[in-house]
Image 1 (cartoon, chains in turn purple, red):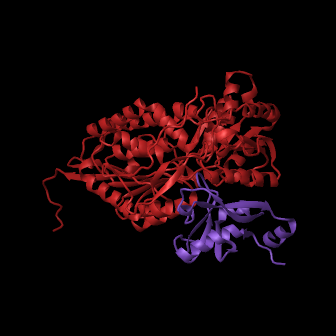
Image 2 (image 1 turned 45 degrees about the vertical axis):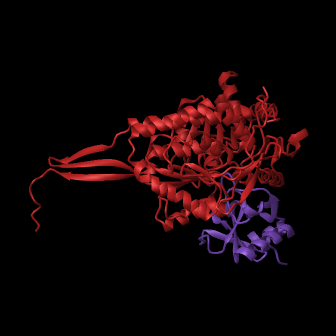
Image 3 (image 1 turned 90 degrees about the horizontal axis):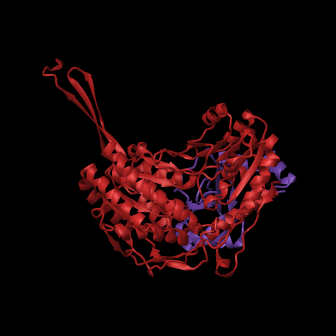
Length: 119
Length: 499
């Protein structure tokens, strides 16, 4: 059985598609910290420097979803669904001018999911 | 006493080179009030060209401003303080309307503190001196502080005028010109301030650009025309700004949030007195500013032998929080700053419940009636759980506190330091040894001891670990906006003798 860590809603997929048409290849990066933190952000693929300190959680709507490794340790037992909500953040995330924000909804993984993904 | 929504123009411009100007491509965005969702005004949706104009104006002004005497600079900073103070109520109302926070906070905290920061930097810049050291009988080493030039400042939406007043006065006092970008959720008080002080500084010394992060923030942070970036916000944008700054080899200051522990040792309950009352309020301060504070005391750690009795009082005090119209001076807690913020907070409460946290108070959105039905309100919420839960580890930036118990000092410290962040912490005790030893062992830049949420201008503030680096407030802040010119002077008439 194929088990994933991250999924995306249809509404969010159509927003990603709009952004892909305008900006080309994209990545998601989960932010931490204050203000607009604790939210997924989307950037042009080469805008953000990624290395071993970033974990690839999966690919949604053709976009790789990354998170900092330290943060991942606290998140890895939860399954994430990327959605959108009306609003406006002050980060550099590309969807902001469109009047939407990506938002992450979480649920606990089942024991079965966790056994496969986290060992 | 009850106030009402202040009046605004239909739209506002950027403040560049001493004048309000329209965005070059004529685009604006709507700025709604989080109190009731109503439109405040339209603000410029600036792009790179607008930012470039502001940076050019600042560069034009920097030579002359950098050579202005500190006497003159201080006088102008004091003038700004006087203007804000004379219009305190107007600033407080605009801030409440734009951010959603209760008027009692803007009248008594945000605006008066902002005034004091301008006055503090007006004062310290004149009291400060460089240094001169005689290295030997004929050699003098002289250190003169010089401004960096042009500073880019990107400020957050939780305390719009106060965060502006943390960043602008030290940069200006040190002799720099500034291009400042307020958060797009809260452009109003910065605009009001520019209206009031438009003629105070020479053109180009202060420039304010509105717009969205990817369209205006990024061009500012990556501009080769600036000499430093100061940023308050979250980690991913912080990393991006550091990347952009690295291309220009520019220094940066980062304030990126926290997950601050607020620790209550059993001695707080030795007496039922004024101090215990203060400690209970100290725990409930998680709800201050709707929890939208980088140093929100969002983890309460209580010693196990007082846990039940102490939390009973904290829960009762939390349930007594008056959440109503933010314009009413009896209201203690207002609206979250934006719809998406509200939704993020509710999503966190949900994952907290899923992870097994017990809801001791609140736990949902707060529905207010009438016009306020369209506002973004969340109940003050207490979740009981353990420190490995995500709600204990991630900054929710809302009125949500997570509480757990500890056995002894060692366990208190282990839990307190088990976090990616290190911005603030609180320690409450009547034990004289704990008063010193516990704060020293906590890895955070600011530890409040028997108090919380005090932000005097003359106490340095900043983070350890992923909360960032650099400090704000205090005269040490001046050196984050300056370079050191060392003049090494020889009074020896004799040559070295090498050539």
